[in-house]
Image 1 (cartoon, rainbow, N blue to C red):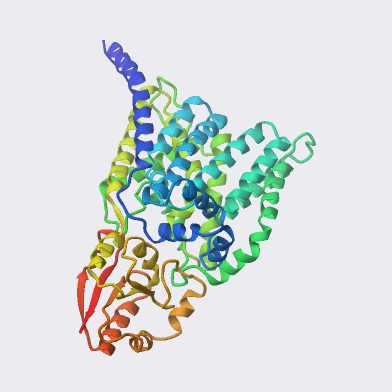
Image 2 (image 1 turned 135 degrees about the horizontal axis):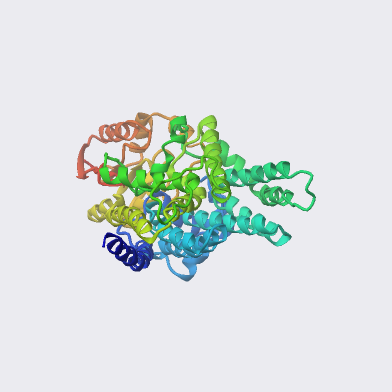
Length: 519
């Protein structure tokens, strides 16, 4: 009787499992085009740069710090689709949905059809993938490129030939022109090829040298951009952001299971459970052996199995190189840079689920992961990434011709998108229109004069009857610069400070406050 009941449960699980996968897919596609947030700094900056001609885009990127491919694509996308928030974000959504097809093809090439379906289910609802599908930035494109690269690599390992070598080189070149962390991934591809070439020396029929040739060609194609990249490396970025601590080698997994809109992250049992389940699945995907239907033991092979061992090597080595390089150079690391290995990590988690073998076990494990992920995705829809919409609404009451100081100017791209056009906006520290942030030698611009000196210079240009506002935020590594500037400007104009729209640090990833200087 017990055996019969267990068999019935197993058959029920076999019917329910496809339903869960369909739910994951439908939920994932829906969430990829659903967010209530306004565009924050990086998104608005990308849109503002991409509205210009291709040559102008390159000029702006020299002072921004990014490669050009995504901006070129967004430029033509906006010409066809439009420039509203939904329009510009839809590009990432479409790319992310297309990536699910690549996930299926790549995972099937590496393993089997069941593994591929599970990989699609996990990638569909993984909070990391969902968030960057709703952001007007290049990270959805990076995930598509890295997935395609992984697919072609698998085909090449099965049957090395010139077409797959050329394919890896082309995809690698696109990746380099999309995000600079592609350097680490392609470097690891080359290292992987060298290792195989060495291990299989003396076997002339093997063409592992092609795995070295492909990333080499990709790097050669990147040479025309190298002068700009080197200038960006030396002069752009956020110089007050420290490099990652070595402890982040063990903590970066958390970024895949939380919504990237979070600003003040509080301890959450839900987030911790989601991360632990995800990490456990990744580890079991790398080291676990497929369970037999009648065996309830989790069996680990610490050498791993060949396919997962290869993906784990590429993934973990890429991340280690990236974090180590950032640590040595003192450049910042943020979770979005891990987009180059996000899908391979999802592959490992999917393989971990697949290793449970029976429909009932897979249903339980995948159901736990999917439920936790969808809960995070649903919460993320409500998160506002910027307070710019609130401040823009408040500025509608400002008289035409009013001066609005934006401190720092990093608030400008998002703020100006939602604010009245009949006001004059001036960004600190360059005192130019802050629609596009100029990152070139940014810290030098801050240090050129003190807040009091800048306030005195600006006060001399303001007429007695002119309305003056300040939009400011404290959380940009600038300490009290904006507070000191506002107070000094108010003192120079013999006015007092009135808060029109208060700062909300906990409610927004990019918070800001609107103040008026009243005489």
